[in-house]
Amino acid sequence: MVPTSAYLILAIILFGIGTVGVLITRNMIVLFMSIEIMLNAANMVLIAFSKALNLVDGHVIVFLVLTIAAAEAAVGLAMIVMVYRNRETVNVDRFSLMKW
Image (cartoon, rainbow, N blue to C red; front, side, top):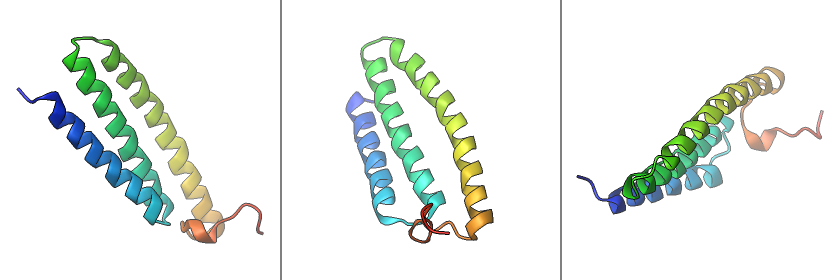
């Protein structure tokens, strides 16, 4: 049986990787994937504590969060495709709604 601390350490590492990805990259697709990694790290913490406390509440919340994340991924990727079609780049530095 894997201890809860191992899950928490893995979640911290994943959240750190996601944070570094958000802070460093300028590519919208990598930025989007980094945010998804951070969201999954938070889900892992919820599952770890739910398992440790023998509660089902964490599992239900994670199921709802994953459902919302799937919808968010579809909308986010559609927005990235539209940005690429209009601006021909996915670089965040070269994209601004205020410029035409």
